[in-house]
Every structure is written in C-alpha cells, then in structure tokens.
Length: 68
Image 1 (tube, one colour):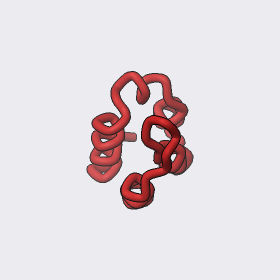
Image 2 (image 1 turned 90 degrees about the horizontal axis):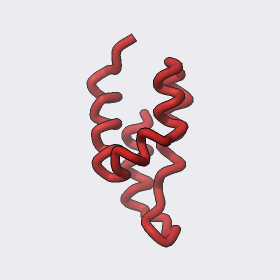
Image 3 (image 1 turned 120 degrees about the vertical axis):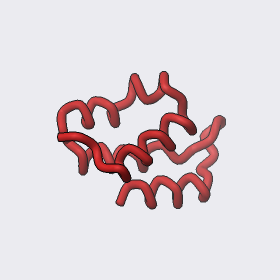
C-alpha cells in the first residue's frame, strides 16, 4: 500500500531533521516496510531530543502533528 501525502510529508520532515542514516537504521523504517503504519507513526514520538538528550518542545509538537 503506497504512503499517503501526509505520511510522505512526515517522512521527509523526519529524514531532514534526523538524517538519512538515522532513518535507515530506525525501527520506524522497519515498521513501515512491514506495513505497520500505525506502529510506525508511534515511532516518531521516540525522536524528540536534540544532541545531548535535551527534549525540544518544538520537536514534540512537530512529531505529534505528523503522527496524526
């Protein structure tokens, strides 16, 4: 099943923010490849921290928005 426009936008944003290498190695990618779209969306919420482990509220809102 192909991704919706919203799903594509979420992935583009994720890859832009986290990098292609992080996406390639992510559980998010594995779940997408298995067609587990709802579970993959939940994986976005695991990626809300900047370098050093600081949780960024902007990323929290951004990931929650794209998760829907």
